[in-house]
Amino acid sequence: MSVNMKGKSLISIHDLSIEEVYQIFELAKLLKLKRLSGEPHRLLEGKKLGMIFSKPSTRTRISFEVGMYELGGIGMFFDGKTIHLGKKESISDSAKVFSRYLDGIMIRTFDHQEVVDLARYGTIPIINGLTDLLHPCQVLTDLFTILEKKQTLKGLKFVYVGDGGNNMAHSILNGCSKVGMDVVIATPDIYQPNKEIMANAQQNAKYHGSKVVITPDPVAAVKDADVIYTDVWASMGMEGEASDRDKAFANFQVNEAMVKNAKEDYLFMHCLPAYRGKEVTDAVIDSPNSVVFDEAENRLHVQKAIMALVM
Ligand code: CP
Ligand code: NVA
Image (cartoon, rainbow, N blue to C red; front, top):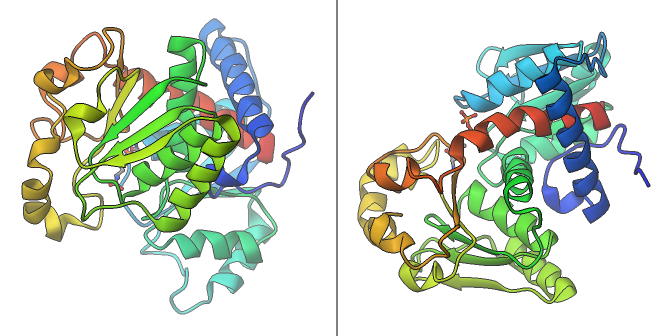
């Protein structure tokens, strides 16, 4: 049975029902097959997506723009610094103006509240392309990629090693707990996840009978892992903290010695961009267990599905 998602914003995977998550995956799978076979799938003929970026991007920008083109619409890039958004014009006024021109907005910015407010005051769907708090399109893609490789999500052990307080750790807590995976976050004591996100993840785990664990011991954490995931130690906007963070995360590098504890057929995942030699070694990211480029490709298919469903 399909769920009508038209008009819905995607700000957090926490706002989606399990049915909506699997509906996105089903459509993504279909659109991936159509693209592979060269079959047209212009589900958004003539539609216009505004793409606002206040932080840099390679994957998100290209995959959304290519995605809109392949769906028969257009993705338009706007530099957050050169449009009026919260400066000289309130977010609520900007949201109302965007809604008169566009059929949807994808936004990457610092302050999560900006995305929440755009959705609140506008009348078109808003897609979160990363904030300091969350990165929902990435985690949806990561789950889709795991499902492709392992044919299931429920019951798998997902271990995130690194900054437990960043957008990826938060979206992983939201997403993996929602689909019934066991989630372990291995992070130093001073980089803990947001309390509300943790509480929601615990709630999801209770529903599924799964586990959500935070630990400062990455080596013990990855024991029998099905998935090992890492991300940069200093996210965009935190570059000034890089040298402190390099010290704090020194024992959190995903390297060959660490991954020995995982299952033999574990998947190595990273949202990219990766700092090779910091959070992950070449030997791990280039190993046969690594699926990082499949993840990057799947951004396209999953986001096309999201846009086709909500726009
Ligand atoms: N993973 C990801 O969002 O990559 P970009 O920063 O290149 O968009
Ligand atoms: N945590 C990283 C994710 C990049 C896709 C950052 O925010 O820089």
